[in-house]
Image (tube, rainbow, N blue to C red; front, top):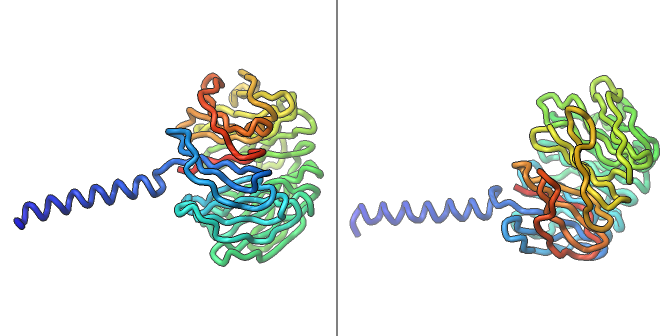
Length: 322
């Protein structure tokens, strides 16, 4: 075999291997949907809108979160009070980690070493050592601890306490609350603006039909926006210029302009819409329609439904893996 022929084969093999990595690695975009009644999570190809994998979780599979590198998925099982950790590359469950009552949401630290589970039924959070896949600490934060978000440096976790209408700032290493920030009644979502300093966060207050814009550093609201119909799931566009929020009781979705802090558009959307995710390019929204057992694919520009995917029973959480 000539040297030129061997080099040619080597180059072809390199291209094939690289192609395999691009398909099987972090470049293979996926949308994950949790199904509460089916106790599982489905993986959907956003290009074909086909379900490519179904992975068992546990009772009341509620929300799904990924590690920053996309290699692990965390399913909060509200019925079982635990968290299913999944190898997101191999699509295999690695096991369940006990948490608190009504485990509702998981936040993962930027370095991927720590996870915080919010437990509204017991009003506390459970800290999980991710490499060991073990719960290492549980601490109270407030009535109906719904969800948490890590600070950019991973040193703090912001825990939304729906029953107390506030947010606990937790020093993760010291395992103590250092500050309490005001929020609205029933606070559900806590989404920092995607800016360098994460100065502000957008919070839904479904019990008051409001969205609150919070100055995180000052610990005070800078704006309140009336959003009727129980504002629930919320995402910001990648550039932070637009907010999308589910109005669950009205079965609709709203666009809020960040600059004017006003509703720019609403559209009817499914039956009991719940949570939503946005594609990295900001063009497409993915919304669970709980009473229809569907995932709705929506144009972020005009809120037109461009596709539907049948899911398991009672879909709730949704997240985009890139």
